[in-house]
Image 1 (tube, one colour):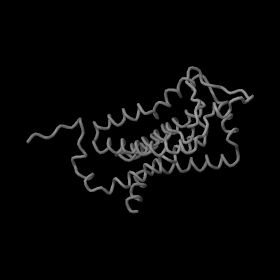
Image 2 (cartoon, helix red, strand yellow):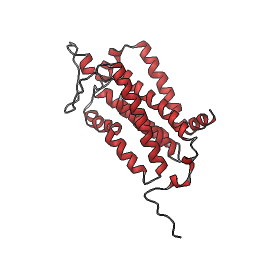
Image 3 (spheres, one colour):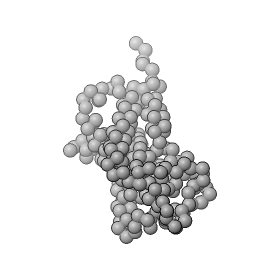
Image 4 (cartoon, helix red, strand yellow):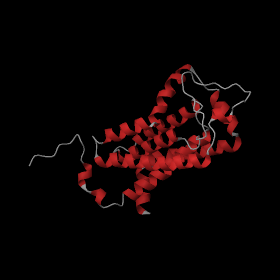
Length: 222
């Protein structure tokens, strides 16, 4: 429990604003339906957004996850291992929930709907039943949490959270997910990653100074 509290404090710049936003999102969901929220966001498209968000959404992709894990090897082996293992765990939980719920994507959910829907040009529309929870969102939030955890300047957590939120919004902007999907993905990532970071912090072997090494640091000459 003490380790959990200590880790939560290290993640305050990420967790506190996230919890505030989560409460607002859940409150909004009480007053507005799934369809209302979808069509509200669908009506907020603009030319710059049609260019920006398809790129932003890639920050939550598997390719970005691998690249970040590799880049962290140049900062510390511990950071890279925490990132890779955290991503594997959150992805495993997220994929399991996708198969459990089999929730339709917006394109499937609104098939045959008469109300006009705007789709971002040149974006491949997913048409399956793996909408909940959002995998890109879970990936982005896991990355943001681990980066907050390993970055000395904890205020960077605010920036990492912003990027994670932009990835989540991009999934709705491009009609790949509903609000419930990205909210679920963020919760899965936050809970799983916090538990994982807490548990890994109790491993005695993981406190070995050699884990602080990196590919960019050469061993001191004898």
